[in-house]
Image 1: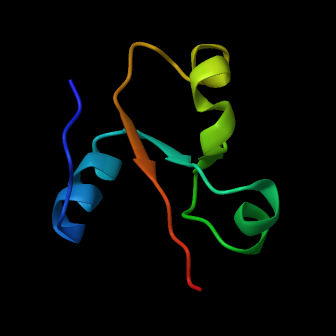
Image 2: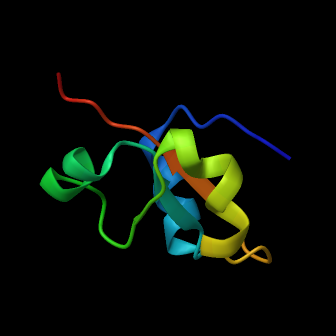
Length: 68
């Protein structure tokens, strides 16, 4: 079930509970900055690679941060 998160506190709680963090920016942007413990899975590849990269038994928090 997909849910949008709009508050940092909620995201922090999920991270503390062991959610998988997925950064959907490209590899260059990910290398420059990302949340600790995040997995890089660019948006254009998420549908084809998510099952092989992520633990299907754990929740996932997908985020994108663009400082531009």
